[in-house]
Image (tube, rainbow, N blue to C red; front, top):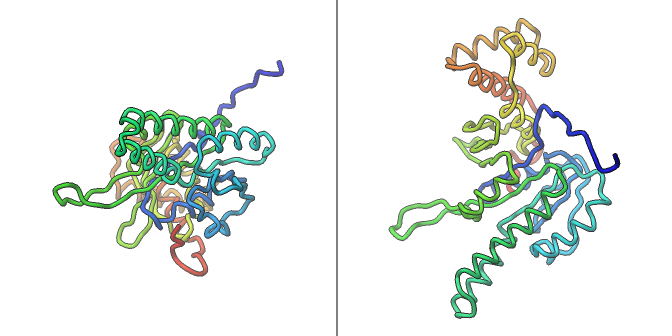
Length: 294
């Protein structure tokens, strides 16, 4: 049965993630911590500034002009990916730099009355569909990066917008299982899981390494780790995170008393976050700068 496979029963789903944040918030640096090798669509043309943080090989589309052309991206990926058997994650950094030139050009044509608004919408939708197909067909981990922009509305009120529209974000969820938002809180840099398909969402994990070391693994645990009961939760900390049983049980009880969970699922989230936060806090700091802003 040459064309038939057995579907693995994986404990943790593949990482099909969107990552959203302001410029210089560390999105590209985060991408270097995804499973490697990486296949990179570097539409922003800045990834070399943070590539030193990657532990594995980084493959990339060579022609800068092709990196923002959905048709060329699709053609190159079809030709190259079958030859790149070690790639584990495809990174699109960023969707913004691919879609915005298409919108800008079509908008200028609308203003010049060369095309009508429905044609602009059709071009944008077709470009998004082509990119999603080019990246998602390989059944690998994916990271889709786009930007937040701060500005003011018609009334002068402050507004934060995303460079991928609400409609397109909803369509993107067909190929995603989590949306991650980069946040800052009193000088701390973190990742908020704002949506997850089948996992927990609505919480923030903070980075203590300066370059998001271990953060994808922490997100996996926080979204998906479940236990049959207290003993299994404690055993997880002992077997995987260097605790003695007495230390783990004492820490577990401290977390439970402090957070007062109303359900088992909430306790598993509080527990995994507590263990992972302590682990990250003990990690070595980045050598040169506490935050590498790409």
